[in-house]
Length: 437
Ligand code: 5AD
Ligand code: SF4
Image 1 (cartoon, helix red, strand yellow):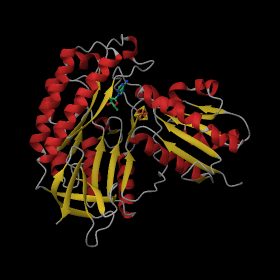
Image 2 (cartoon, rainbow, N blue to C red; image 1 turned 180 degrees about the horizontal axis):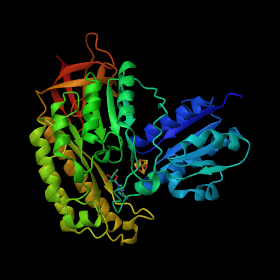
Image 3 (spheres, rainbow, N blue to C red; image 1 turned 45 degrees about the vertical axis):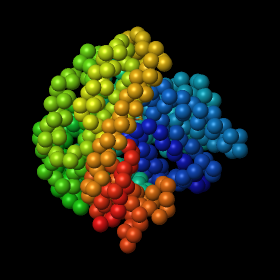
Image 4 (cartoon, rainbow, N blue to C red; image 1 turned 120 degrees about the vertical axis):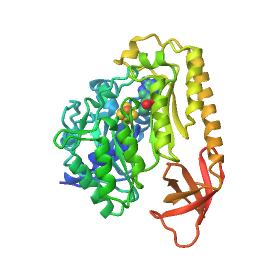
């Protein structure tokens, strides 16, 4: 077979980045070469996100842009992978001439066949969702050597009314715990220093065979690779158990960082979102986390302007943020997604009001982060060195146990992948600055 070069561009959440490593592995095993720029590609894939309308707009723009490569190389095959492939299916082929392959998140084993057919001029589509596919037998093709993403489960059964994920990624299913632990050990042996266990809703992890839940898995992984840092994303507030909180607290190598999306500070809105917890329950969980895990850092997701959200309810979200004192937050304007339950609700918060609420939320979070980071001055953090700072070559950049970005001047023999102690001397809302001790 002639050498075929494939380039994949990844958008969206970490799950997609992890999937790109699966697709790359499938392709390399089938004799394809992965390259890291589109210039000399025979096949270009976009691994896409559908979570909000602007995520999809970005992909459409990129597809327009890819026409230039197609002009230069008439045989070029362009494919769409991921959530947008699943959501739009045949519509992508009908509406976009440039698209030759459409493959959803559970169909990545078919990608080599789809490429073969497409290279011979026939466009192809595969968008079946599966109840069992976890790609457990496919070792992800990883390029970078410090932090690795390990997918522990796929899909989501929560059906929050705004969210498209259950439709694009299908039902929840977990990988066997044993194979996850084995992968972690392999990563440690290959010099990786940090693992993030990934799932749309990691608290729902369940190994049918061994009856292990997420907290048991986390414990097994942490104990199997005691020299590695362990992180996980994303947790659902409805089932973050005491057992899990205690597991985090009792293992030094499990990071003191919890991402716990709240979405709204109003019980009425939470109910309309089908989040299945109340503000009171959420705050009780946060209090427990703060009590059991000293120095814990918290982050969240918030949606501004959900259908029927009143000004008062927006204010309740602001108050909740002030109460919790998140270290960081991902904040979004509500974006109606076809087929979701909320799509049928009237999207009645005017666009400019949504934006105003969002900006208010962002501004408040910036202030909170800034205040919290000022309190960090004088503290000592254990930092995993990830690379050179983006701004200055003479500085290293890394992350603290609590997931904060820490920048410090290069000195002595420190290298990428080292765990070093840094005393914080200065801070902004997004970064801590310090010196090696
Ligand atoms: N509109 C805005 N934000 C959304 N999210 C999910 N769906 C939507 C939507 N339709 C946000 C939620 C979720 C994060 C991954 O994206 O906050 O936690
Ligand atoms: Fe990830 Fe959700 Fe976007 Fe799909 S829609 S890429 S699951 S964030």
